[in-house]
Length: 383
Ligand SMILES: *[C@@H]1O[C@H](CO)[C@@H](O)[C@H](O)[C@H]1NC(C)=O
Ligand SMILES: *[C@@H]1O[C@H](CO)[C@@H](O)[C@H](O)[C@H]1NC(C)=O
Ligand SMILES: *[C@@H]1O[C@H](CO)[C@@H](O)[C@H](O)[C@H]1NC(C)=O
Ligand SMILES: *[C@@H]1O[C@H](CO)[C@@H](O)[C@H](O)[C@H]1NC(C)=O
Ligand SMILES: *[C@@H]1O[C@H](CO)[C@@H](O)[C@H](O)[C@H]1NC(C)=O
Ligand SMILES: *[C@@H]1O[C@H](CO)[C@@H](O)[C@H](O)[C@H]1NC(C)=O
Image (cartoon, rainbow, N blue to C red; front, side, top):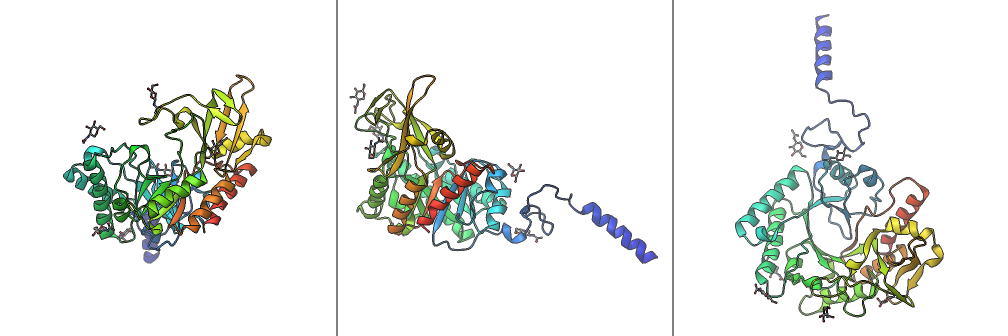
């Protein structure tokens, strides 16, 4: 009797301290073994330790579970939480053996001060370990003029000191740096070999190639296959760089540009002159659109699809029926992306990736499923 009573009391206490039943909570969240780990399995709070041979590197902009659930995790190796941190995504990524990293946001004034820099690295490390993350991605895109060698070297030092600090805690932590499709584009005179040496790899953004249009002021491809090739060749073979292919990940666009044509001559869409960093004409005259949206618009006029054989990218031109305005949409689709993935494979690069993973239709509609399977599928040409 007495024993039974004690047992019942123990049950009551147990029930009281048990966490709320996880109604509607995702299967990868909620750990009863260890309160400091938010994942449903303790091992998912460990940083990923696999050495990935081939990277598939994704930028996620949306703190949105409905998207994460539908990522093709079998293709990914790293997800950058761009502009947010959520342990729920960390648990899900880790459950699939995928790294979850954050953005390394540092100002120029912090970078150039060795003491502020040190403080910043310390805080970053805390943020990474407190959230059970796997590393950091640097996306510093400010102008750094050729003579601004102090800023240039401060950036390299920031990346090196971050890498040293992270690797000392866990050699599996990952540090990556975003660079333009070709060195020094948009007046970013970085120390590219230094950044490559100080990090695990560079994410080469093979897009926004019309950010400085030097010839006629017309809309052009966002991600020309030949420019991707040229940019990579310079990074790899130019004596000023000589960066090993194992240090390069080819970043691909899951978005395009819609340009308003102030004049259309043949297929050339002349655009308004909007200057950027010393050049009179730029893609700032256009508007960026996610592939998901572009696909939807194109499906209303599929006959307008055109393939540009010199850039190996698609585009279409149409006139708005209500306002009579003509637009040209320059974009990438699964076919153009798979060609660039093939290029990355031929060059023996470390990986491929996309800006950004949220640019698709993440509803359970047939269209959504179709475009997700095609877009994630394009990475197969690299794998
Ligand atoms: C709980 O999990 C964290 C992260 O894996 C670990 O560092 C800590 O030692 C664990 N604590 C206990 C009491 O098991
Ligand atoms: C993280 O994501 C979950 C969904 O899995 C959501 O409920 C939660 O509010 C998010 N947390 C933060 C801090 O944004
Ligand atoms: C770099 O050159 C520009 C002119 O091109 C000049 O305005 C600027 O002061 C110079 N900066 C340094 C740090 O020398
Ligand atoms: C890479 O950096 C290390 C210092 O961390 C230096 O000793 C080495 O010479 C560098 N290698 C190259 C190729 O720059
Ligand atoms: C840019 O525009 C300005 C003002 O219209 C003009 O003076 C300059 O020559 C142009 N630069 C180039 C490179 O065309
Ligand atoms: C096709 O691609 C070439 C090479 O990038 C470019 O010069 C040309 O403007 C493009 N044509 C169209 C219609 O976009």
